[in-house]
Amino acid sequence: SSEMTGDVTREQVDFSGTLRAPIDQLILEMRQAILTCKSSTHENVSTIYVCGGTSLLPGIMRVIEEGLQIPVHPLKPLT
Image (cartoon, rainbow, N blue to C red; front, side, top):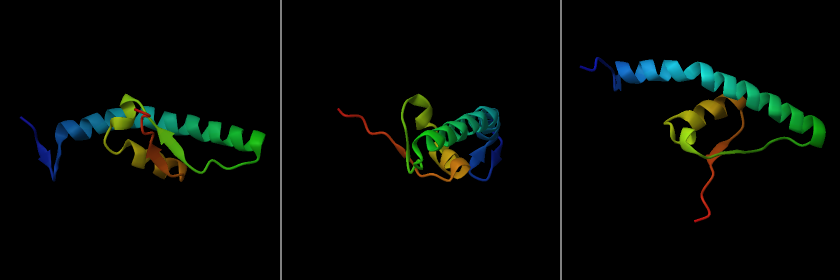
């Protein structure tokens, strides 16, 4: 049975906690890539586009956007 905390189940909280460390690592690596790009091009990254299965995780774009302070949007397929 699912123990509820507000509108969130205990399983959702546990799952979210499991993903936090890898997402924090992703943000760190993205931050390093952004700094490398800025150093080479002297331009700022103004927007990040995400795609693929992980981009479909609820809240992932918000977490990345908050971590990098850069707007994050889904990349729309060309189909």
